[in-house]
Structure formats: structure tokens, C-alpha cells
Image 1 (cartoon, rainbow, N blue to C red):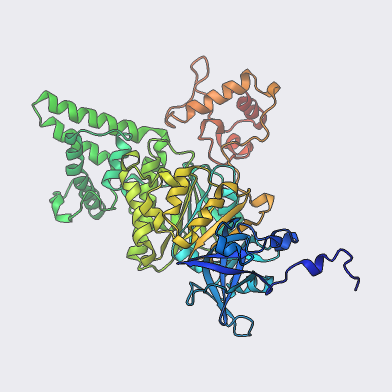
Image 2 (cartoon, rainbow, N blue to C red; image 1 turned 180 degrees about the vertical axis):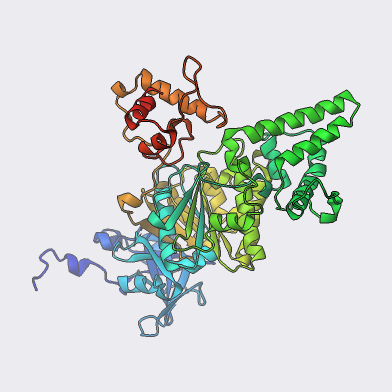
Length: 604
């Protein structure tokens, strides 16, 4: 073995060697004094913010993180040879340190006294602290303190007590969420996941183990919506008149009763209708009814009125319902909504993967839904997720992951749709009792309901530069970890500080890089890089305009050419979110020559 000619090895303090001593103790915070030369030693021995130190107290080694370093100003302490003072936040202790029985425990049972020695934490101690092998641990990356040590998180504690991923745009938040979910999926094969994907970016992250739903393949009948939700859909988010609400509240239960009677009695006209109140349905009972029956009831009621002003309210309500139900953008709600009768069990099975059949993840892509209805859709999905856990007695655990959570559970009660906020809040407050867990993702914690955030027992805080965001996060973590939030503005890409029940102690880590094929990527931007300027011509613009118009064109209306003649419908006439079909398939259905069909597609 060659000697170190520079003497660097000899000067480098080793773990267990005293670097300083305790000079003051205040609750869970301790001040340690160091001699000035300790800051001029090797890189590994520098005492600076973010470093872990140990304080020997009896048979235990107290673990703390340095949050502040400054020159020592107190003359009495300087007289003892301590030129530097470091503030430590104590998080836990290694009991029976240095013995085979050594174990790490959160919290401090015996506080240090003045003069107790402080020393560096070695790799063996760090591994002992972060040893979560017996707690269904998952590996998310490496420790910033020592990149050779894996950053482990308890999958069970993280999921069962809710978690949140917070960070500004561009810090790798979506990649971190995908990594966390992939690792949880491996550690908890019994768990199903439902991801509310606001920007359509998680569809490719789980491969064949996820189903991707969007307006093109989703069936969510209108009769599954609660009264508040269907009113929001019908009126497009505007405040309806009280009289309109009263009409719907009275007639929707009658429409439900009428449908049930029709299903029970095939000969509808031969049997006298029963009293609708005998069925006991309310406006929120999730049973099928026909929109045609509701319209008929409204029309019949309007025909009995003599007051012109009252008739006008009914007429406007009829017109509004017909407009919404015939809008092709709402086809996932109204088209074939009653085909198959009562399909609630089938729909729940599809949405929440019951049974999973090897596909435990549902990615709900929200970017293609009409803006006026997204809040109601999120509300009904979250509400059904909770009710499924409630009425199944938690038989199959479910994790609901909500991207851009501040949109749906905002701190300002007037800024969001009330039922959506209540549905998420109910999962946050009561869901764990019924096996329904919550994962929140947001870039604006200050705009998120503090009550919902406080229910998340594990937080992954990535870079946050806004003071309001840091303040709300400071109120959500324990006092002993609050000082670590000062590091948030300086975190690098894919770096985070993990707090809470899922980690052994507050941890600065760097998330592992995902394979390129599993990275989140928005499907809204399909072409990357953008099209060449020479490709953007009149034909391209005409095709774009036609697709645009097709979003609000009824399928019952056949498209025509410039002369007014009906022309074949190409796949460009359907919603662009549906998977592309081979050119030969629609050509064969329409009885066209494939070559001629391709020419038609290019033309139109």
C-alpha cells in the first residue's frame, strides 16, 4: 500500500472522531462549537449546511442536520477555542451505537448536555438510519449526503397515509411521480391506481400495465352524476335560476322511477304507471333514467302552465338540455347512455380495474374533455372512488393520484366547483379508513386547500421559489424539519427533500433517472420537433380546420363537399383523440377503393 505523500488521509477526520462539542441546547435544536481549522480540511470533512452530524450521549448517537453555520460571537465560547458555531436540528438517535444491537429510532429520548462530543456520520451509520428493508421499502434514488447509499421510502406508509409531490415547473416533478408510482406498483401488487392526468402525459409510463381512458373511449353515463354535478354540466358552470333547479330536482326522480317501471314492465302502455314516490329515488340515487323521459316530463309540465313567463323558463331549460345532450363533445355522457340497462357495476369495474387482470392502473386523460365539464367529471370520478371503498368495506385498496391538485381543491372556496373540492377532501380526511388513498401533485401549494395538504403524511418537496408556497409547506411539516425548507430554492433538477412517515428522517435525495420509454410526455403535442415550415400549407390548414369543426359537429350530420353532395366520412371527421385506424379499414366499410379513399383523405 502506497503512502499518501500529501498527508491528506492523515488530516481527514474519520467517523467517530470528535470535531466539536455542544455549546448550547434549546429544545430540539443544538449549537455545536468547532475550531476554525475544521472548515479547512478535506471536502468530505467540511461542516456546512445540509450535512448530518452525530452527538455522542451515553450509549446513543443523536442524529442532526446542520441548518446554519456562523462565526462564534459569544466571548465565553470563543475563549474555549470554538471559533465556529453550527446549529443542528435533532431528528432521531441510534441506540446502542457501535454494537450489533444498534437500531435507529425517530425522536430523541435523551437530550445532549454542554460539552458532549460531535462527530461526522459515517456510511455505516447512514445505512443503518435509512435501512427500511423490513417496511416494504422502495428505492427512489440516492442520498445527497452520500450518493453510494440508496434513498429508501416505505411504500406502505407513503400510500396508506397519503402523500404529495410539490415543485415548480421544470424540476422533474412528473418524472418523479411516474417513478414513485412505478415503484409502488412493484411493492404493492394488491394496490390499484387511478391517475387523473391533466396534461395527457402519463399514458406511456406504465406500459401494458395501464389502461388509458379519454373522451374517445370512455363511457360515463350522465345518470351516474349527482344532482349538483349534472346541473353543472347542463348549465356549463353558470349559476342556474332557482326555478330551473327546482324543476330538475322534482322531475329527475320521476324520470328514474319511469325508467325502472319500464324495465320491470315490458308492456309500457298496457300497465298503469305506479306513483314515482313509491320507488324512493332521490336526485342523487345512481340509477339509470332516460333523458327523453326527463324532457317529456318538462314538456308536459310546461303544457299545463298559463303564465307566459313561467313557460319561458321551462322552454329555456328544455333548449339547454337538448343542446348539451346533442353536443358531440359530451358523447361520453349521453351517447348510448342506456344501452345495456343498469351498467353501473360494469363501469366501476372498467374505471377502477375490478378485477385488475394484470392491468392495475387507469390513466384518465383529461386534456380532451370540454373545459366546462372537467370539474364535474373529476368530481364524479373521485366521489365514486370513495363510495366504492366505502360500500365494499375497503375490499380492494385504491390510490387516487391527482395532478394539478390546486385546480380541484383550491384554498379559495369560490374558485373551484364545490362538489369536486368536497370529493377530494373526503378522500383526504376519511379515505384511508376504507382503503382509498390520495396522492397529490401541484406546483402551487399556496393555492391548495391547507386542510387537504395537512392530511398528506409524506411530502416530496422539490424546488420551490415562491415565498407563499414555502410558507404553506412550512405549516405542513414538523417544527424539527421546518429549517430544511430553506434549502428548497437551491435544489437541483430531480432533487427533493422528503418529509414525513414514509422516510426514516427528513431526507435530501436525487430521484433516479427513468428510461426514455417510461418518461412522461404530453400527447397533446404529438409532433416533436415541430413541423417544417414547408409542410404547413393550405391543405394542412384545411385539414386542421375540419378536425376543429368535427369536435362540435354531430355524428348524425353527414359531411358534404363544396357542391353540397354527401361525401364519405373519413377518420379525420372523428375526434382526434381516438386511436388512428389503418386506412384500409374505413375504406372497406364504405365500399371504396383504398387508393381512392387515400386521395379523399388527403383532399379533405
